[in-house]
Image (cartoon, rainbow, N blue to C red; front, side, top):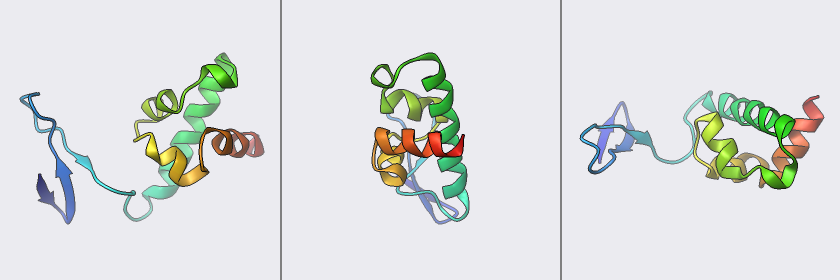
Length: 88
């Protein structure tokens, strides 16, 4: 575990690389960016698949964020779906 610029990170063990990830919620103005990434990723996945076929893990991976962010910002997949529909 290291601390860079006031952000605590953890490397991926055994990878030989020091890929760091931040812990906790996004800092500063990143919250809106993360929410928008999730909404965009969800929209793309729901266009091609029905609601039941899309997982929170898929959405998060497509958005490049931790799956917990879906629950943090939207209360779950259903809340994300409803927020996405409201945007359209």
